[in-house]
Length: 194
Image: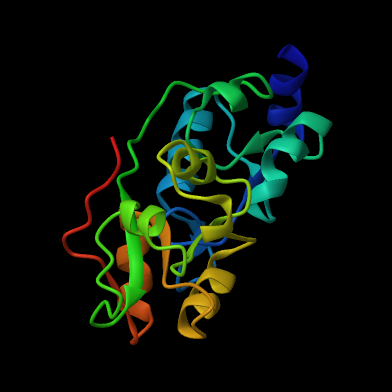
């Protein structure tokens, strides 16, 4: 840990991120910002560190990249028992409320993960390697109903093209997507799993 602190002060930390609002994105001046970016900036500033080097990557490569030393810090994510066996986490600083994004009008009347469990024709998109995969399987959704995709654009395109009928992301991200993509909306009466 001392070596990492020294590296942070001299070179800065490599920070694995994915490019999604509201967590990580470039503002109108091209400056990296977002909720997780500003949390890291504040934490590092408290330690007298003023630089880090963001690297945009796919979600599924963050934990392996931290383990291999490719990245010093990974983007904020759910703290799960499986991930705790792989990498160390900071203290939790946010709670992510799950949400489903669907086509406008919610043509398949999707309200919960149960809908994917009960209807094998419906497909739900998630980030490849995301905790939601395990959560969905644990709640009874078949692996065949879960489509793992590498990034936000892939999720949006799969939904728009009809390859999936919904995708699961955090509520903040879901609202950003619905505000930007005219044909999509957030499920209003979503019943998140326990």
